[in-house]
Image 1 (cartoon, one colour):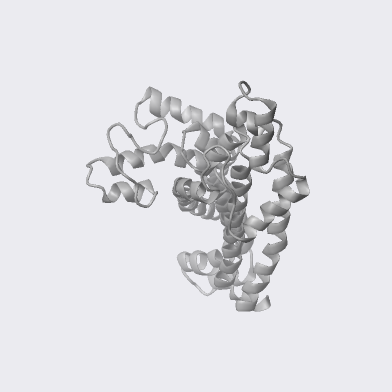
Image 2 (tube, one colour):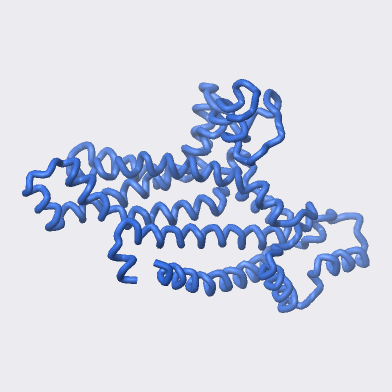
Length: 337
């Protein structure tokens, strides 16, 4: 298992280096002047403009900028924001709990509903239940996130008044210094009555919007994998032995059918943690995705570069955990590697 893990770690190094180079070069192609974005287009002399470029290190040759950028990352320094003058790592760690909380809730919703729906559709293959579930999954996968989010806001928030429109908490009614950054945890331990329920209400719509596409993908993948496994000889043998349907499906079929499902869950989790840009923008959710969008508009190169690289590290670690999960689900994979 240790050698298996070392090989997977070795494969991540070239990926990380390539991401670092591509990110650096692509951000330089974004049109606009970071000095003008910082100071405004008026009221700045050419001398002051050149001075600010020098302070930001943007007057250096591109190869020198990349060398300084890569050297900083090697030493754990992801840069300093041009706009806020805060360390990128500090800003990221401040905002990431909001993205993580939303992503975890969305993935829990997608997994808890998607896996049973896929199993049930596979068992009821060809019936009206199968067609209804897969039709709903296809619809959920096809809906644009921005449209789905706006429709939920229109119905649930504007028309029915059931859920808030934006944010993580009603800051007018509830206010306290966050301890962990996870609003559900902080409001649970606060002495302000009703704060926890208010944070849950703020979380409902973003969770549904962000979890819809993963739910659809997980349901369809689970059904496809289960249909393939249910045709295997060992499943037919288990049925011939008179084992109960629960043991046949839950013990023999599901464990072997989970491997591609775990792959999808891992990839979708990495995607969600990368910052649900559209969802966070629609609901004004103060997470990493909205922070990166704001950084693009402000031409904040260090924040963009550092934020993307930190997200890449998280995605790589998630994929590594998925590889390790393979060995736990099916020991033959671990031994074969």
